[in-house]
Structure formats: C-alpha cells, structure tokens
Length: 231
Image 1 (cartoon, rainbow, N blue to C red):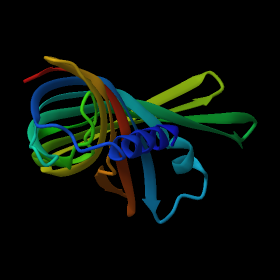
Image 2: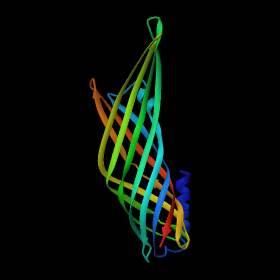
Image 3: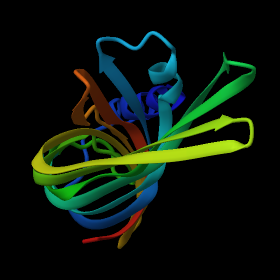
Image 4: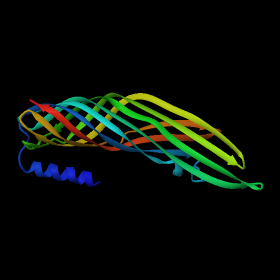
C-alpha cells in the first residue's frame, strides 16, 4: 500500500509541472512479484485444511519495452513481460485412533505459476528530466501456466505413509496490467522503477469422490527496477 501512495504522490508532483517532452526509449526491467494460491472445495471443507493451505507466492518479474512519447504527452509502446512465482503452505491435524495418535500433514506447493508474452502499452507522460508515465499494458495472447502438488503424510506410531497428486494447466489469454513508472532521464540514458498492479488468476478444478477442489493462483503486484537507452 505504501508503494501505491508513493507512486501516486510522484505522479501528482510531475502533473503539476508539465507533460513529458517528446522522446523514445528502450527499457529493460527486473524485479520481484507477489501473489497468492488458495484451495477451495465444494462441498465446503469444515476441517480448516483448505484455509490452512492458502499461501503467499513470490518470484521474479522481467520486462523489455519500447516506449514513445509524442509532443502532446501521449505515450504508446510495445514490449514483452514475464512473471514467475512459487510458494507452498502446509496444514496438520492429530486425531486419536485406538490407542495411538494419527498425525496428518498436508502440503500444497505451487511449483510453477507463470504469465508471459507480448503487450501493447498506452499512457500519458509528465515531466522532463524526472518522468512519470502512468500506463496500461494489454497482453495479447499471453501464456498462462499453473502447476500444483498436493502431498499428504500420515504417521501412526512407527508407520508412515506419503502420497501426492500433481495438477497442472496451461492456456493462453489476454492480460491487463496497470503500470505506474517513475524515471530519471539523462541525455542518452533513462533509469527508474515501475509498480505493476494486476488481478489476473489461473484456476485448476478437480473432482474426487463428488468433491470439487479448485486451486486458484493470482498475482497481486510487482516492482521492477529499469534501465534503458533514450533517443
């Protein structure tokens, strides 16, 4: 949340000066991305397992872009973006079976959650040396991939049994990202940071014994540091 207010404040500061001067630049960005994975069931789980298996995701974000700003401040461009995340969560329970305890540990691991592909950009620029260019990136035919592994380990006395199931999906679709960039422009170089906000999700639904389990991964936001060539 602090990042959002920071970028909005910088945007407002630049807006009180002037729109961006005409320029074009190539940019490369690298940074971090955050998200979440959750499991829901129908009929609803009453043990607390599904809520316990919800976990945060983290990974890397990459971007390569060309941006052009005209003499009226409008910015357009194209590029390639890639978001890749992983993470895992676990939940355990203990019940008395006969004279010994039965310990059960469930682990849900997101081994791969990725979104990548080309995009078109449209925005508006402010500032000269200090540039703020809020924009939308619209991913066209981007590739989405999600792989989940659900593992259970049961221990009773000296006996231990482990089992796992793998679920995955891959598809293509469109992706919309709100981007709030802040740049410093020299004579032939430009560098800065970009805050990306997107709510895209990917789901996997599996039915076992009339119980529908849905695995849903989503990207929350990312922060990239950028460097590029101004011309």
